[in-house]
Image: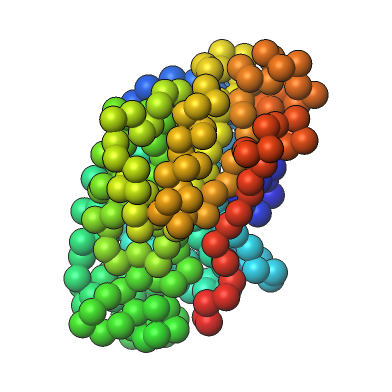
Length: 294
Ligand code: SF4
């Protein structure tokens, strides 16, 4: 599904539904959408249940043009109710669509780190078993084998990062800062990113400059949107930008949020019109997406 989210091109939802895990979930857009559209075409009947959609797994392989694909925009791929066997199928589908870049964002980095801790050989075996399932191949029948080669960024005996899969975590305040440490432990991964959205508190309070965002390729910053949006103070944004510059991370300021928009009588309810911002916040950088050979 095409999307208005500024840092991606397409959303892909083989999983729908979630449950809150921290303060940042309080006004969750995904849950409100699940309730609003419950039972309608393409939406699960029960908004409180995490639902898997195997029939959507091969959709990215049908998209002709290269896209940045946000995986699970109305759920969390690493939710406890998503079995690793299904996540294997999602990774297999991503490996079989190397023309796209897939962006995985979670608030459950511990489970993501556990998933990614599988060794090279085990992961290859699992991906190929998943490929067999995706193609409904019976024993003895052919199916696309995911070769453990450089094509997918996989280096035998060393690492298996799928070169087209980026892993990220959401951090909303200093209480959730530990997620970045867990993200750094997710080895291997091609690129790491952090979304500070909704930023509802100072994320860097008490931290030393130049330490928090080391090894993070991309930082997204955004205030909360919606009628109950909580404030995002501008000094919280400024300190993240300073830290990101120090650590050479790319910076993408997405929006200043609905609270700011109301205060400043913005023309946009989300506060995403850059011309209305302080000059220092007018920054929308991204790492190169499609330079990798596939
Ligand atoms: S983890 Fe994400 S999708 Fe799940 S409830 Fe929290 S904000 Fe919503």
